[in-house]
Image (cartoon, rainbow, N blue to C red; front, side):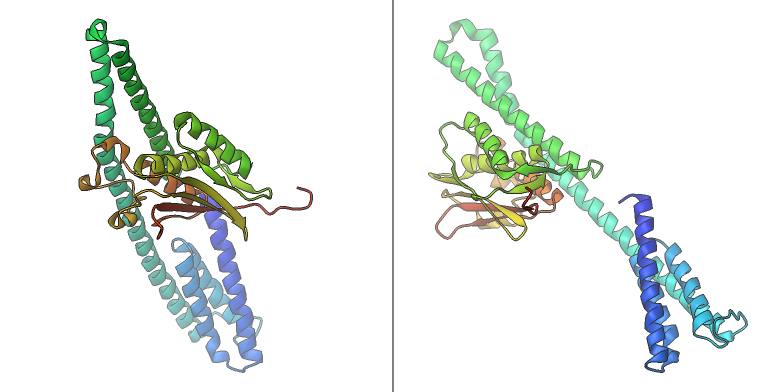
Length: 353
């Protein structure tokens, strides 16, 4: 939130709280005849404003305004300012102290939360770097070794051997491209400096685009689609959401050992679309479920083909979905296999649409 937007929000919030407090005080005096509670009501209003706004300004300003309101509207002589009433000086001191202490407390808490968030981001970066250092080594070594062998011993290799090496280089290069795409996406969103542009997208067009790309990469892996019959419009960054679906489908292909069926299911209702990617493979080890979107696996979790288990792709999925205001989760199915589910808000459809 920008500086001026934050200031305007705090101004509106302070005004609303003081207005509610003022009319509550009127009710206390006229209806319940307990004017002695009015100062306490305004002190509580000052406390709320100091607690909910940023910094000290609005808390101290509300304390000053509260003292003036009590003096003007609720202290004899009414509707006249009298600065020589001792109780008003005492109220001003009490409210000012409340504002200062509450402002100091909330500022300290916000600073600690910011430090904690930065610590978590640093830990995430460290995890990503550790994962990347392992995962880039395998494909780069393969590319270097195969290209060196082709260059130095190409005349002694059979066409089949050359084709196998070139295929390995191509697959590893494609994997590296996907890794770079994922890293760019997660750093772009985590930086907080880039705004997600939400554009109304037809669900069926999004899924068709993803399936076309997926079939080019995995022509032997069918995907069973279950989509709603009605037109569903979803505000999203379509390129990022394609990346989410591709990552989840590829994750199933690479990790769901024994998988025979892969399902992409979407249901819509109550203002949201629910995406589910379901497989009937080996499932997810229970000890990994709680950290599957963290972007990092311990070395003991990594299979022999380490480059396939970075966890970066799933971390990217979680980052993109949450940036869209959605939720994402993973679970094992009782019948076997894993289910990844995420939700996005949909647009309301009118008759004109």
